[in-house]
Image (cartoon, rainbow over all chains, first blue to last red; front, side, top):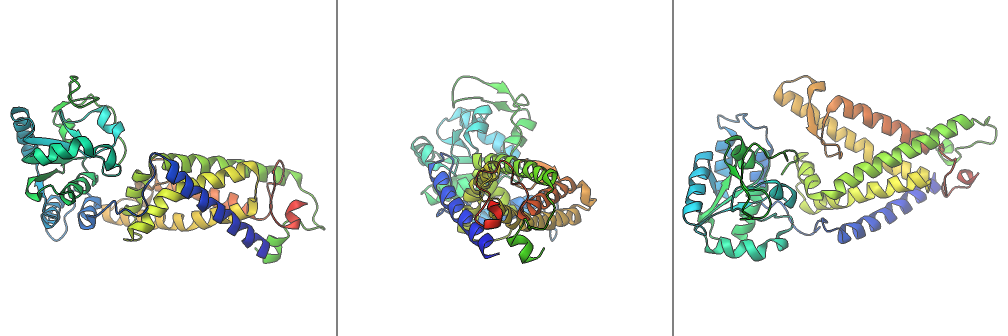
Length: 207
Length: 175
């Protein structure tokens, strides 16, 4: 039995050491010492089953309340469309920030949206942060539903010095956007391509 | 399972049962392949795994959750490779059990919660448990995990010796 436990301990030790090395070397590795979910209360509301009511409050109401506690504002579907029209009229003053990963962003995003995946912010900050600093209204979105990346990214931007009253979270997200048949831009930002939503085939995942 | 049986998986008086050992070898390969696949799919998207882990509400300690999300997938790949090669098989099997049993318990707990919240039949519960296969039906997942646990138990008793590079530390294991 002792031998078995010794063997198990050795495998565990080598395994942890190799896992640490692999995480360090992997381009998708996580930084262990970084809190990726600073908005814990917001996350809890998002992960609850959508549509259910708690103490007479809908999930949307709870989310709005929790976002307000973080100093953020909730953008409804109508708000998002209105802000999108404004972003077309006044480029730079109203901007959209896509909080999803590269794969989903490249498959299709709200036209003109900047990207900021809060798990790897260093890749996007050089382009996205100056745009956010110059904008008057910043609408952050992710997939929608139980996706919490928009809140986390908005909190990240707030903590990076963007005034909180400029930050809006579009909770319906990209799923709601495409369901409303609004325009979608595949590939790079302002790459020239545009398609009608509903043609985007990248659906799965929690982003 | 007695500690004597664990320490001496092949007793001198026991009649040889090669078919059982070859079945053990097959189990070792199956387990190895499954763990490499499950680990690799999670290692490719550790942030997605982290989000799924948070949904279990096991802990609010983000360092602990980060560590599990970042290290567990690679650890699974490592264990899978050891089993495929046949290195430290019993020790690895014990580690698999240490991962599979608590994980199955938390998946079961979450599924019961979802079934109660959504008022649906238990076997109709479907969610992404963070296993690396996306959304799964809970009953199917529980059956799969039970099979994996039984296969691990088989290896723990000393089966799976054929074609093993270095079965383990104990003298009995080297027989």
